[in-house]
Length: 461
Image 1: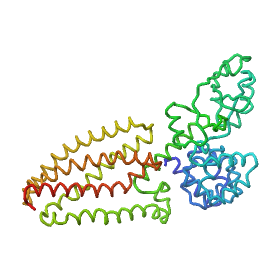
Image 2 (image 1 turned 90 degrees about the horizontal axis):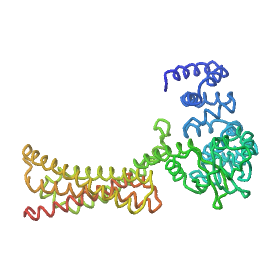
Image 3 (image 1 turned 120 degrees about the horizontal axis):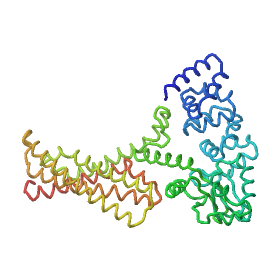
């Protein structure tokens, strides 16, 4: 928090403690909505409630829009539904829909019933598309122009509609059936001859998405073509709304955060461990940890039990057990992270998949050669210091296993996210403790299998 906002936060807390709520809201009115939101986020629930109950619905909406999802929901829960309905009416329809979609269904229905008819209809229309779709993040507040109108007639419509729309700089053209047929910028419209038809100056070649498209796919499409605004249509190309760049930024940030949490086996709802309830955080993490615990005991335990005769005959094998599982887990996680990122930011086809896997295998081979040399030297040094015994056999086992485990880890980490993607499962899930469990078992299996072969060849067992 900026030093200025810290001072304002202290002042507002003092004013609220004295009951001077109006003066507190006057201070918030003088700062940017982003700063107001930051200050309010650092108030407790009772103080927030006092602010929103006394503040104008418009100012409340502007500040609420700048808060993160968790704080928005918390504010909504602590205000009566009639007040939150007034605030939501002041929001753009797409942002209002996002907030309502995060609330309980019964609460959402009650709030919508308290909203004015026009705002309620817009919100209901967007809610039916689903929160994670292009339809769910679009705004129905836009300007569309008939292709048969003149530039002068179109400009008059823009002037009348400008106040109630989110943006007027990109305009979309429809036919008499409201089907999308083209686009033009406000600049094109301003410099056009007043009598020229819109169909003569519009650009018929434009990018659009259907309302059912996943919001992440829509966001990547806008990023790919450097679009500030993108139209949303139905299956018959009827224009339904537009997606703006601010919505895309929110989607990409949300998806990146969600992937990060899923890769670690935590919940995407844990935006801040200090803000997430202990019970919710525990419920989100414990399933993965139990899976890892049970899996390690069963899978890794089974491998260890199967080859117990090896480390009983050559106890020195136990020294490098942890190193083998660690190198396998780290290699696979690195490869999986790169794979998940690649799937998140670009298109995937068989050629790209083959190139990524080939690259990972080449990279893993070069890494394994370097780390094998290091490990070989470490084994020799450890033997000279601790007089472990079987130094040549152990050195060959560790070196060979290291190469095989790193290459296996890289291949596994690269291919599993792709398989999950093809199965319509979030690839980020594959980088969770599930992958670590799999690599622990595979690493030990490779390590002991190579150990069995080398020790047999040397006649040690």
